[in-house]
Length: 128
Image 1 (cartoon, rainbow, N blue to C red):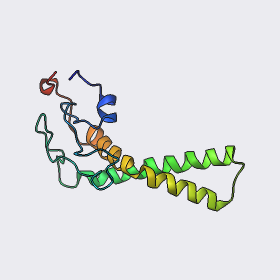
Image 2: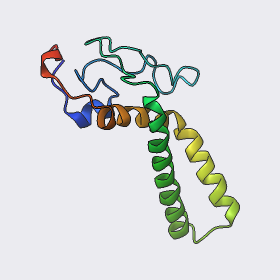
Image 3: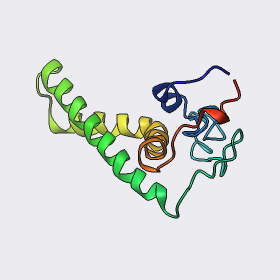
Image 4: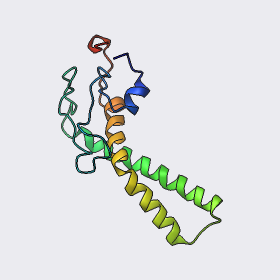
């Protein structure tokens, strides 16, 4: 596998150390198992939860992403739909957040791993 950039590894939900191993065991659209993660990287053996409670911080990232989506949807509705009634805002935002929940969960954890876990890329683990 060719060397992935950090952005490609984040988008593809790959290990922050080797950028090859997958972090999640199932695809995001498998709604029963979208949250299942490998405990260790299948390629380099990195234990993903490098400290107890690491992924509690991912809740803050998920919250920030959700707030951004709420603001964006609100602005789009206001400008394109001519300031519809409140129930339209609530229904639209709730539906979009609910549909994006698997992705928000995953990318919050991936961003936590790549930016706040203290794990650095190590090219010696790249099995290219």
